[in-house]
Image (cartoon, rainbow, N blue to C red; front, side, top):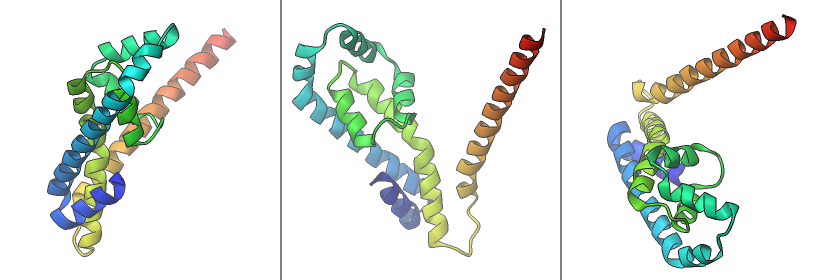
Length: 159
């Protein structure tokens, strides 16, 4: 229940300290999940990977922090399940943990800020607006790129 824990941490400790505690908890949870997956499933998976699965396992072994961030941000599965799954692959622990913390940072700061805002309703919490504004900016950039691609496609099909 990362969301609830992060909201509670923000309400109890404030937006910045709450986010820091939530990121620490995410790091510990990722390490435990990875370790459980490694201890209980890596040998089983390593014995059975062939063909395409072997290529996927090699990809996990050579991926960087960016690869972990990408997988973490995709809505594939919950935080714990992704950690267990990574543990069964040939992925290295340090890039996995680093990527997990980086991918957890936006929600940690956002939910901690919301938790802090809820605990002090008379006070304006500008940290709570930051995640929403970043999301709005990212959405505007994506819409602009889509619109430009549509215009190029329409111009190419008429000429």
